[in-house]
Image (cartoon, rainbow, N blue to C red):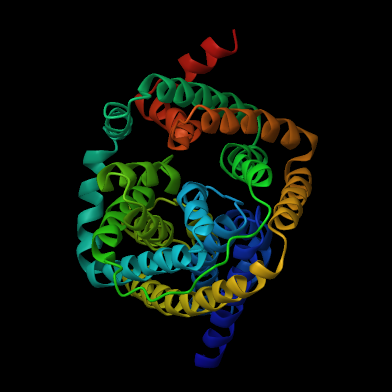
Length: 406
């Protein structure tokens, strides 16, 4: 039994690394495709199934920051990391940005493991209280972003326009079709296009000591924000990322740590949510539920142990891969890298979403580039996901859709 668990744990980590490095392949989509296999796997033992699903999801959440930081290729959980990550990259500190996200993942996974008995008791109470006020909380986050900003009027404009775009696109297309091209257009392509027009030489990357990293604040914030992702429907890593950025007042190092923590916390906490609230908040949790039902308390503790082990292994692999990127990239023309990435993203968009995806990406790119040209923080473009979430929790979805589609 031990060898069987070890085999599926290793297979999950390997597949998690592969999917994390390829933009556009979200683990939720992968779990849907693998469902027949997972149901068959459940016959070999619950722990073998858990080992595969959890290790894949946790590993993917960590390694997916490499393409978002080095290539500007975002997904829902990493889209906000493109902006500060690119700034680190231009300073020659791309590896440090990856280190920060890994520090956040390890910190949050450890915090979750230590606090798991408390969370299994506390989450049901928190859910019953917070679920009625999440739209107010997100609206307050928006106000906290806008009020100190000198360009608040532009910021509000981009938030509303991107939010309306999100409502229209996510109600007209499946999440799988709309999400990747939209987030790539809002965050990834503008960064690549701007870089192509301003730089010809790839910034020399440095690997320096990180003894000055103070990861507790960012990690704790990521853990708290990740808790919302784990228990509340409609709240993803991006919305939680905006919340953590507000709490951290835009401190880039803390923010990168927080984002790394949110991504991994969201994975682990969805399994605790499945046990305590009987709700599936992720594709991984749904895969567990469809294959073996609601996990017992003993299963949850095995999930947490698997998350810890997978997190540490994925962190070592991610740091090794990041160091490899540092060695490879300076030998390549920066313009050539950007051109190759741009071409690859367009091909991936066509594969995932067809020609509709190209149109979505083009329209969202106009928003992203305009935001940059006006000197407005691209954080406001998270209105694409935040505004639909606010409207959903306020109970105005039907009214909004009827108004927009008149």
